Length: 153
Image (cartoon, rainbow, N blue to C red):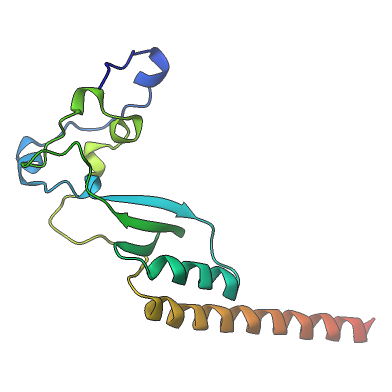
């Protein structure tokens, strides 16, 4: 990999915070290097949920919600990890890796704490039924209020 030219702008993107705990790094199994999280638009219609279902029909794909934001999780092992889960390209790692702050490392011995995590179409469908029912009920209530307001006028 060619050496990356450094410039002042790029240096600002490096994560700040406490430095890495060497013991933590030795125990880490590089969770952040074994998946790709792709942002998704929030599903609003049955068609949106149907599209998400298609994603979930593929191996190595799940969908999660973290801090209210939807993501497609693609299980994919980084080619730059060595057998000890160390980065072979650490000195020239991409910006997204440089921005990953050590104090926000996913390794803490516990599973991820997502708001929601869907591994199957069935799980997503159960959520979609509830979501769409609530959405329909809110819309129906708004229509009733508008109708009552119109009668009062």
